[in-house]
Length: 103
Image (cartoon, rainbow, N blue to C red; front, side):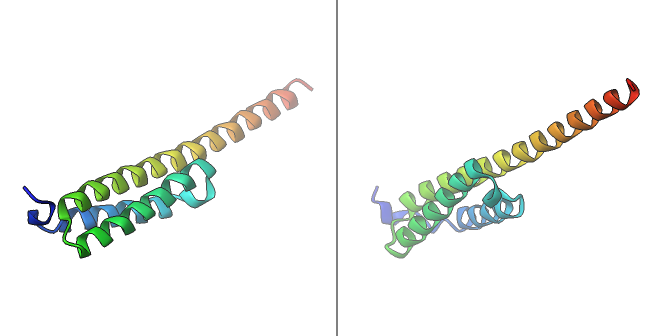
């Protein structure tokens, strides 16, 4: 089966775009490790769109799936960084309260 005989991956294009938007909204561009995967997701999506233009839909669908997965990883990394920062702040507040209570 030739690559061009596959249908256009419309659903994958939409889900990839949504995942990238979600990563941006989660603040992935402010977390270095997440930024890497967000950029990778954007590049993979662009490559996939070029493949669609060349009627290489099977390969495009694969690239879009990778793009979506990398964007979802960027979301997870951004959320983890935010949770870690919040946990560190809470631990600091607990320590401050312990110090004040000990006086």
